[in-house]
Image (cartoon, rainbow, N blue to C red; front, side, top):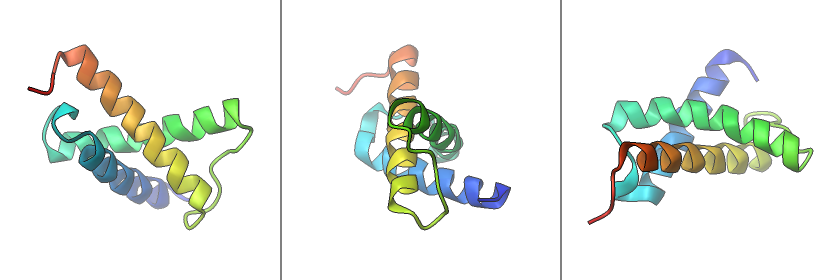
Length: 87
């Protein structure tokens, strides 16, 4: 998967993660999307480390699930560190 593919995957995964976390996601929409790109990388790394299941091609379900899970984890950690709580 090329560089543009990583960016698109991360942006979409970040948007889905923001929809899942709703108020716990810090920052605006652009910040969340950037964290989604980081989350896609983290999800791929964790998937290959824990499950021996690295990111595959762009249209693979495994790739999308790992990217979304990684984005949720990153957004949750950043939300916890910034002290943003659901009221």
